[in-house]
Image (cartoon, rainbow, N blue to C red; front, side, top):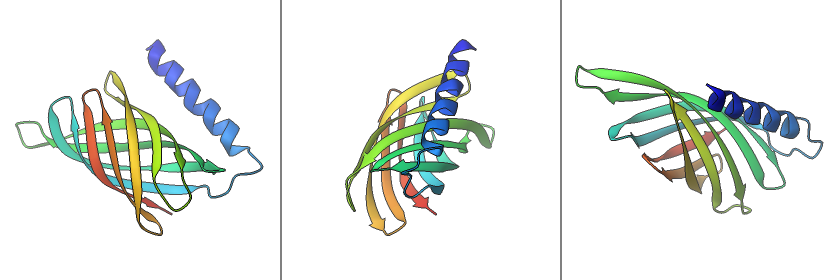
Length: 138
């Protein structure tokens, strides 16, 4: 429980700092769709969030649902995550993230490449977590 409170406090503090930044450049909504593996279970992730961006740095809190086959048909599992990254101009994005689902929080590395002006191909890799998909920046 305390771990969740600390993660929540970090998210709120980061949003307050970047949300109030005078130099913010391109804040906006984001949506993602990924094929993912979370603790041995494969499924599809559908998520949405908001990107706080300034000078190439991005803080992106997100929430979504993982659709997976739990043996009795399709199951769902809610998740929340936060990503912090740096993007080289019109190029690769590199960063770190933390994903919370159920009672487990896992950190991961992320990389994304532009496919079109508002679409990026992305990958996440961490302990017990792997995802490959696309992100749409509105």
